[in-house]
Amino acid sequence: MTLTFTAPSKTFLVGEYAVLGAAPALIINTTPRFALVATKGPTSFGDLHPDSAAGRWVKQRAPLLEGWNLEFQDPHNRQGGFGASSSQFIFVHCLTTYLQSSFAKITEVFDKQAVWNDHQVLTDHRGSGADVLAQIQGQIAYVDVSSQYTKGLSWPYPELSFGIVRTHQKIATHEHLKHVDRQQMSLLVRPAQACVESFGTSSSEVFVGRLKAFSNTLKEFSLQAPAALTLIRMFEEQPWCLLVKGCGALGADTILYIYPTEEKEKVAAFLKKQRLNLVATVADLSPGLEMKLTIGDSHAG
Image (cartoon, rainbow, N blue to C red; front, side, top):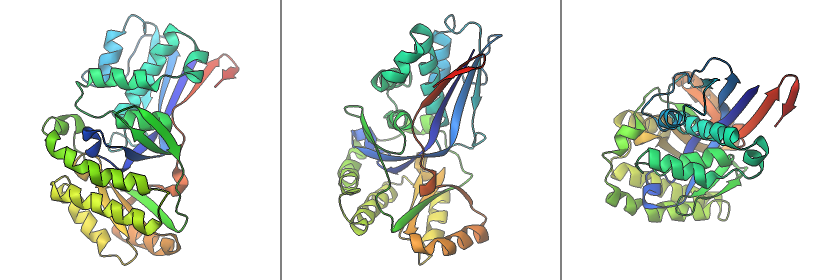
């Protein structure tokens, strides 16, 4: 028997840090996808970090997982920035749910609120858990952490495109969040909410303007790492760049940029010249959590 779970890579479009003040967020979910392959065999929990939420969850439920071999597949090769740790927790939570109930239960009435609640407990509420909810939902996920409500959206602006590039920088999010001033984060709620509300309901110019306002506030609060700011300035010098922001902890992991779709060739030439690794575009939007059960030669999923 083999159970395979997959979930998308995530990138905050808007709302990072603001979610700590219960603001809504928009989170982009794309390929490549993370995976957990669980097979019957010698007990092994792979290389899950014992202090991570997934590692702690597995340790607590070790008797239930006796006789299972867990293999986590990270398409980003541990370079960070796309939700590896949150996907690990989703997977092991889903696996133990299956082992205690049935495949039909988790595919038909999967309880994302239970996953979010358990994640918050195991991480001592240091983060918002928005990434967990987003990767379960998929596409461009509207996430309201105060109610755990999510909705999958498509990209509503055909005249605009976005790209996400890797910076090759990495900051440990769980350590960084220990030192974040949460009272200050509440000041991000209003610009984040205004931006989220305009997505798909206002013109692209209005949305980009409000996203710029949110991004500038991140800079004002020193929530963009120096290395990210250097790359951001490089993008801002390009006439086709309508907006650019760092994403991940201190905006250090990835850079997201928005440009007119008709300028695609110029953007590609710039990325090639700067040797930047393009990870995802609007064409790579991906669904949320998916599961497949294999027993012998039969499949269910």
